[in-house]
Length: 320
Image (cartoon, rainbow, N blue to C red; front, side, top):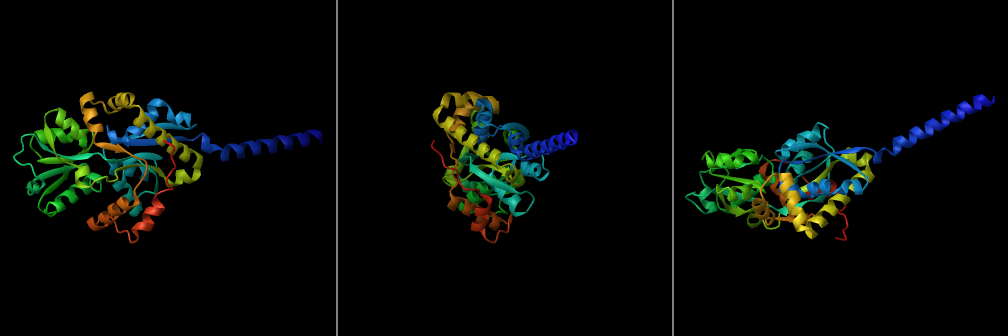
């Protein structure tokens, strides 16, 4: 009888331990992180990886995807191959609105940070002179797509008066130099690289097209977030730590930026001047963005305000 009782006790203990492991799995799950190739907007991710901020918050993070454009990353979320990512707001809005991915925005990453570039010897210097030209964007439904369309509309150019094609940013400078395109719009550091390579000049910075516009965000798969709330909070905290580090450690930040973008010091220095890192999403600016995506036909969001509220988690407080 005593042996029988002992067996039952051991069995009960095993069940308790297994249950404990199951419900504490939040701490042991590795977060599969993604970002865009050499995208200087995603510097907070590079800093967190380099300085060990993820480990400091008690989470395990591995880079599981380095994509060339935001829509590609959305495919990664749809396939279930990544849990979190640094990416533009536009692809996130389009993917969630069209139900190809279920995501939540943890925080903003940056404002501004893109530029419209033309050949250095181009025979025009005004936005209005882009009429009839061939212009490259990183992808449809990207922030750069939106900015270009806004710039053209503001210059009085209709959508049919230019030819817009999709080219990944790492390939844009070469295509511009070979005169296959007349201009491109891309995220930093590619516009600055065109300058330092003496291949192009900036026709307009994105901050001139739309001042203080929202750009990239840190997002997490909704299912992952619901199942791993403490890890999700720690990921956001590491992001805030990175933003604080960037603000207070310019020399070390520059070194990390050079390492992860594989760009030269001069290019990165110029590019960083065009980016403002800021975790807080301005709702009114984001709302304009969603409404414009509706206007372009990329989305059909009937209640933009409610949509944004459901997409964005409560903004984190920061003592930075």
